[in-house]
Amino acid sequence: MKKSRTTFSILVLLLFVCVTSLQAQDAGLVVRSPLFGSVPKETTGQETLEIQSYAAQLGLAQVQVELDANQRVLSAISNPSYPVTPGDTFRLVYLDGMKTVTLDLQADDQTSVAIPGLGVIDGKGLTFQELRKRMLSMVQTYHSFSNPQVVFTGTGSFTVSVVGEVVGTRIIPAWGLSRLSEVVQSASPYASTREVEITSVDGQTKTYDLYRALKKGDLAQDPLLKSGDVVRLKRADKLVSLGGNVYQGGTYQLLAQDNLSTLITSYGGGVLGGSDVQNIRLQRYNSATGIWDVHYVDLVKNPGFALQHQDQVIVDTLPPSMQSVTIEGAIATSEAFDTLSSTALVGYTSGRIFYQFYPGETLKQMLSSIAPRLMTVSDLDGAYLLRNTEKIPIKAQQILYGTSEQASMRLQSGDTFIIPFNQRFVTVSGAVVRSGVFAYVPDKGINYYIALAGGLSDDATYPTSISVYGPDGKKLDSSLPIEPESTIAVAKNTFVRDIAPTVAIIGLVSSILGIVATVVNIILDAKSL
Image 1: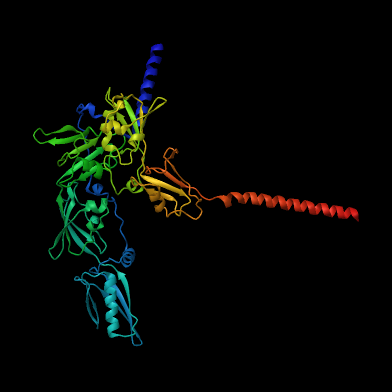
Image 2: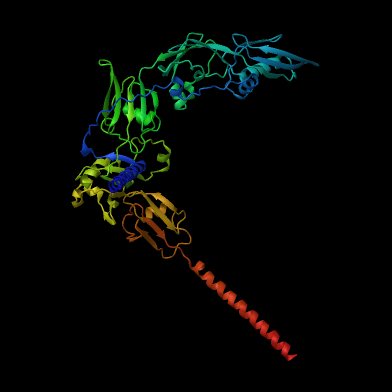
């Protein structure tokens, strides 16, 4: 009985440690020290990643919404790019003297519209709005003051052929607002999404990239179809599957220049927290043996690793590690930094990294490993180490680029290394025209920043009193060049503001004394009577 309780207690303790470690990994990026080298993993069994359907690769809806006749007419009228389509019907109404003339018109197979008694309008390449203007102009040319009106009564339709890498050739009905992505449902999973050809009736062939259209928002790559178009789907050149600990797993068709880093960061949206980026699992079919070989690629050392057709890439999760330190503050935590992202546009955010260190690793070795992740706003001289309850100042810049006794300090599990932000600005406040924050310029004094603030305001003291405070709030010598994150405070003349309460109190007391004196006089006068 006692032995069972002991075993149960050990299992509970192990479960608690694992859960705690996993929760810690979810809070930040895990980086392993390069001193471990390429840690060989035991080759696991091949994990099958199913190739997604053509529609799933593009994010197409499984069931398309069909519009009825009235909805199509309303869509055509409200869309200024609706092209004149064979079979479109219109109603033309105008006055011929005292008589109302009503004509029902239809675009023929060449998109020409004939108006009896007036002429023929060629609608090829025209939108409905452009055709309407020409019809009204023609009527007004022959019938002045006829007040012509054109009503769109029905949309035409046509068919397009879909051939190539499909489950079967299809003749698909379409109308004026049908796009390329709406007619490729018959494509096989191996059809190319990057090179889709459309051959028009005049023999011209254009190539479109449906992935860019539906995944990147380039709608020019998803054109409107025209009568007689033939859509040809090619077979994909480089089809790669991505799975595991990434934001967007799936089947992707890569371009010739795309590599492993591009697949994970651009197509897959990046890795999730706790991902083992130094052991990316690659499953590649070996035609000689007829089996799938499993390899591991270090994404940090070999981001440009070339992928092949039908490769399967899996990002595994790091196993829990007890020997780690936490690095927080001004440090980059993403594998790829996008200068157009919302974070880049707004500013830098505090990052967190769990650094798995090698036994006996020093502070200098760790800083050298994370040096590529340091940013221009990283305050290396203001860094410090939290060890138990002790705060140890660390001169990281001297450790990296010079000599320091702290370079040989050994890392301990549970250490927290803080890198503060060093913002390159100077604050000017007080008696200036425009108080605010201004960009730091080296070797500039207080006069430069006061000039940026518009100079002294009318409420500045005389003689002028200017104080300079450092980031820690300590007063600095105002004759020296201003340092980043300093605050320049110009004293204001507050005599009027300070004396106002005193004057108000004196006035209030005088008023009270006057009231008391008046009341006393009234009482005395009453007694004398």
